[in-house]
Image (tube, rainbow, N blue to C red):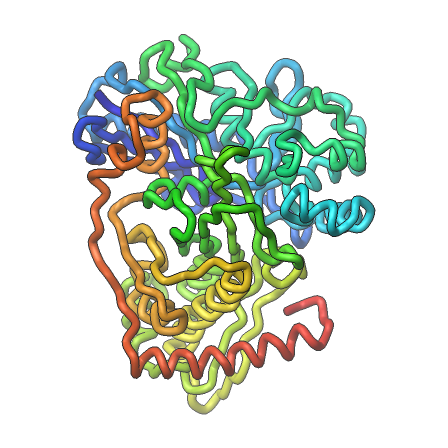
Length: 501
């Protein structure tokens, strides 16, 4: 008996097959093999074609089943993880009307801010727990305002995971967790926000049917089952945004537990057991996968857009051609902590919520042509990313979320000793690394939704801790000193009131 997890990312689409009895991953694959294309026809825009996600997913599922050497008919349930905050629009024939406006697209910021002012700060924060910002609701408002003829054809709006589930099952539905990440959900009244819908002039018929996160959300259609090499009627029993799902994959479900990722963007995600919010909406609060009105489980999300993408930029444009990430880490390790006065503010991938929705660019500060090299830039990039994490985690601490232990998958930036040691050193937190990923988490979620696992403890009994990084006192002092200098530079940039931070 097997479970299939699908992870619809902006860089690639992944699929993993998990043996339900042992909890072990038996097959995985991803597509495309190079980073997926993001269309940016204007500064701050970011779009992808949902049809591409579907094409990549078919290849990834076929590869995962092939590597698992199983019969696709033995897959008993499917789970879906997806890039958060995206907007997909379909007509009554379930055909896509335009490219998806994805998570890092910032064109709708002004519309979100207009709603925040007009509805009122207190009303938004106490009911929505966030400013509408540049989330899905504001993106839908942008389409309504700028593409009115197209908007008239819209039957339903969806998040990326809703679209993939629709392609599989023919059913258009969503979850409370998904609606909350789009800033459609009223946490006080436990329903779609009538205030937001009214302000933007949205009819509630545009909202997909709401289903539980862990439940039968539809079954594979015959033609689709043939396409995917699976059995007709196989149920989709779980879906969640990538960060709530990453937390699930690390068994982060209870108040005080913390998950982190260091992919294209960087995220720290903490679970809160009571309704709370940041008054400046610099970190955002959404319904976690196990949230209910009676027993709140809220995910407080710190997102930094320019994380792995900065490290990738350094690798492609600064480091020696053809270098691997492992060798890039070795190069960075040849210079001391603090990179001899060179620092990088790692903001250059769209609006940064942590900086109050400013359209930001990356700044290299303190460059000295006589001493600084490629190695200094490589180290300053990773340290700057870590310091941005610390800056945002201090905001979470102010909300009452204590961060003593950070759980993360052993992937992306967490593979870098510099990144891991700097993060542990500057935050004082112990970092635990686990052998898991988003697609595996989605598969385990499918097992919970299908009732194959009765509890999360049963689902994650096989979760393997592979490393623990503890703060090193002397090294920690050096990182803390370098962080204070970095923060001074960031504060100076913010205080200048310039558009590029």
